[in-house]
Structure formats: C-alpha cells, structure tokens
Length: 85
Image 1 (cartoon, rainbow, N blue to C red):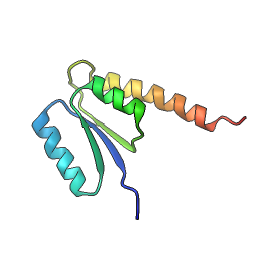
Image 2 (image 1 turned 90 degrees about the vertical axis):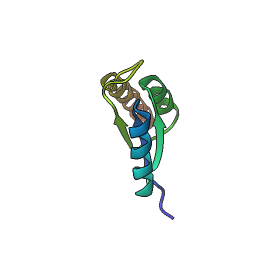
Image 3 (image 1 turned 120 degrees about the vertical axis):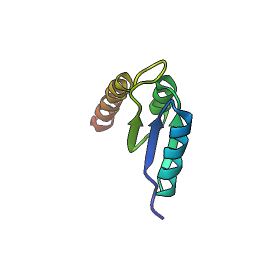
Image 4 (image 1 turned 90 degrees about the horizontal axis):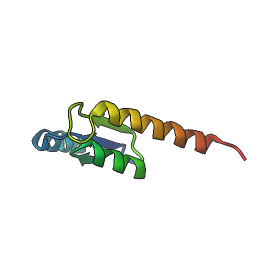
C-alpha cells in the first residue's frame, strides 16, 4: 500500500477551506486544515508535510510570514538530519 502525500492547508475562509480539503481528499491526499497562520505554524513544527498550501491574508500570521518561518524550520531540520557524526 502506497503512503498518501500529506498536505498542510492553511485557509481562514472555512467554507473554501472545507471544499478544497474535501476535493484534495477525494484525490487521495491526507489533508490537515488550519484556519489561521499561528495554528498552521504550530502543526508544521510538529508534523511532516509534502506540501503546504497557504492563504496570503489571514489573521494572526499572514501566509508570507508563515512560509518564511516554515522555510527556516525546514532548513534547520534538513541540516540536522544531514549532519554526519
């Protein structure tokens, strides 16, 4: 059995987010939906995703800041995993 690709979807419009989440799940993706940048960032730090889909205008943290912060965490994590001892 093949592992589903994981998507983090961060969208503050609950109706649009729900529709997009359902569509992606129908296409065999494992989708985590968060409704603001802060909760999206929190789950990104704890879990691994193959793709992040981010709204730009959100409360608490906009999509650009979230993408920038996620990139810093991913880069640091990649460096730690690639380090040889």
